[in-house]
Image (cartoon, rainbow over all chains, first blue to last red; front, side, top):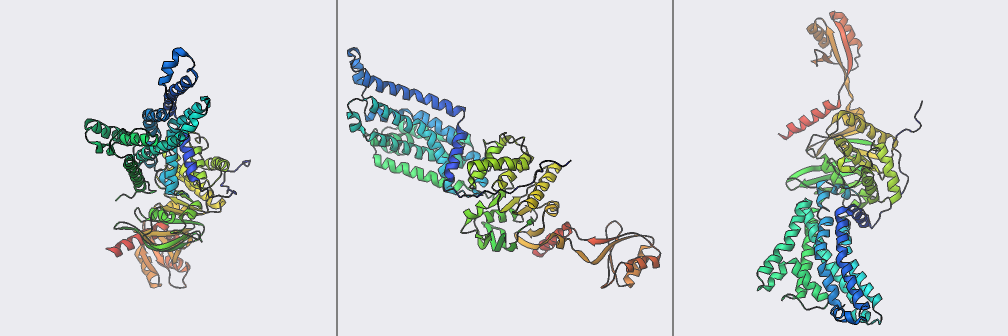
Amino acid sequence: MKPIYEEVYRPWHGRLVPDPRTWLIIARTGIRLQWKRAMIYTLLFSTIPFLVRAGQIYAATRLADFPELAQMVQELKIDAAFFSGFLQGQAFFVFLVLIIAGAGQIANDRKFRALSIYFSRPVLFRDYISGKFLIVGWYGSLITLVPGLLLFLFMVLLSTDGTFFSDHWWVPLALLGQSAIILLSLGGVILALSALTGRARSAAILFFGLLTIPEMIRGILPGLPSLGFVSLQALLKQSNALLFGQELPFAFSAWAGLVVLAVITGLSLLALWQRVRPTEVVR
Amino acid sequence: MSVTLNDFTISYGDLTAVDCFSAVLTSGTIGLLGPNGAGKSSLIKGLLGLVPLSGGSATVLDMDVATDPKGIRQNIGYMPEDDCLIPGLTGIGMVQYAGELSGMGQIDAMQRAHEVLFLTGLEEARYRNVETYSAGMKQRIKLAQALVHDPRLLLLDEPTSGMDPQGRQEMLDLIQNISSHGTMSIILATHILVDVERTCEQVLIMNRGRVLRQDGIEELHGTYGGAYQVRVEGDRERFQADLDSRGCKVSPGSRQSLEVTLPQGGDTDLILESSRATGVQLRKLVSSVQSLEDVFMKLIVEDDEADL
């Protein structure tokens, strides 16, 4: 009896359409792969400060009419500093999310030699790196930009006279700008470490060290304001204060700090360019 | 024409892996045969634009390697030598992802991924994470991801490396299957002669980055002009002397046989007459065919000796 179906190679008759958004395919798959238990828990815990801040907004706008609460409500001032403080408070969760989403991102591709699969297809370096940035950016913005904008929207909806929006219309732009600075600089650093070390764990440890050790040194030597330039945390606090129109916490120029952050991002890209290669030549 | 190479050179610092390589690889299944370090993998990577050219030029499917690497990669399927996996994905996920990266739509890529995983014998394991695959399964998934977009040219770099004998046979069957039912050309780089003999129509033998010979399998197997392996029972010396006197060239062969080359225009009757005349019993008379291994070894040894 002949088999009803013979397993032979059958050509595909479809048409290949070069997609200029290859980076989107890489990002989409990467985002799906990172949706794991550690990420879900981190995102869940990160909603606690968001809910607390949302409660503050509700109290400040709805409980002012109660005389017994008036004193407390007056202290809850919802302004640019409120949103600036929210972003600073998310720093720990940003750190965790970047480690979970970013540390293994390129290290694992190198470990499993996946780069030759990517680069033997119509994928360019910029597609690959943009896709990887989008993965860490996506999860990072779920901790920073998205809740920040939701809080702003919540405040706009609850404020009855419209003065809040007219006074603070620029806050969403500041939220967007500061989130972009955080995610581009820290995202670049974690991806570069992932590519340089080739091991997710090593990248995570180095990232932790880079964030904490310079900050500790800066704390030990408060008399040297220029040390702020080597601390990523200090640089980000400084840019936060600049964008939200707050008093600068450190005695160095905020604009110079932004330039240093741009240089750090540039160096990260350079490291990625050096290490993300389809083939490794063993000399 | 699949691939044209003109003085194609690839160097890694001081080391020249592919040295002024010029060849035309037509359609069909072509074996790139050479010992380890001959430059086969570097040649393939150079064709894909994965390593920069140090000199010369090449076109693949009429596209220039230097100016249109993206166009080339869209039309090529590449099965790398090393274990290459995309961590975290299942078999079906990885092949679908590979298809999408090559320009297939999401649904097309999914359907096609199922098809090629069935073909490569991974249908049972397609929902398993690729990191849990055995060595043989990793080879198969590499082939599946190279096939998913039905490329015009398939580059296979050591496709049977690390496989057990049964797995090797199955992989070679698969390559034959693809070659006979597909429309694509195949370049198979290997150091295993049997793999080439079994699957290829043409062979390109290379050593130390250079082409030593390019020919069809049949031509390489070509018989020596009227050469035969002869084994006799009886007085061998007398038989040999008689053949010499009849104008044959006789040399000792393997297992006590003789390699007899007939004179111009001579035929096997000459050997039969000689055995009758000398009273030896003819036990074996077969046409002497040179194996691919003979050719390969001869060329490699000659090339190595020439370099000393």
